[in-house]
Image (cartoon, rainbow, N blue to C red; front, side, top):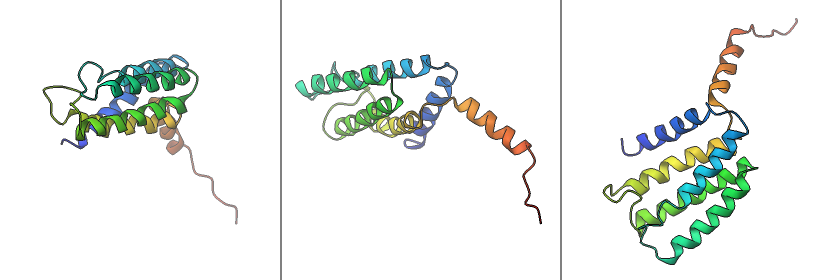
Amino acid sequence: MQYVAPVGIGVLYALLMSLVREPHRRRLNALMVAGAGAAYLSGGGLGGWEFAFTALVTYVAFRGLESWTFIGVGWLLHTAWDIVHHVKGNPIIPFAHTSSLGCAICDPVIALWCLWGGPSLIEVLRDRGRGREEPRATMAP
């Protein structure tokens, strides 16, 4: 469950974000990745590197205001930072020892959705459902 739940959280995040219309969805996600970049600031245990990472993700998030690719890159950067914290630093949730590992599993799911362009998963599922209802084209003999 420790490995499955974070994937579900990532999918749930993308589904909930699908309720927000564009371009607000992209901008909100840029803000979310900026916030994630600062998550370890108050006790991550890596000293000045926490500030350097936060500055990097802030820049990437700023670029993400206009680009889903930058938002996806920001989540991948946060994934790497989660792994560093799981191995060497402090967990993202102080009382949950494996919380950084869970975050490192969840974040790439969100990153893939962002690199896909952050589409509304609700619309994607709706369109696929419609596609199945339409008759298949057959080749003429």
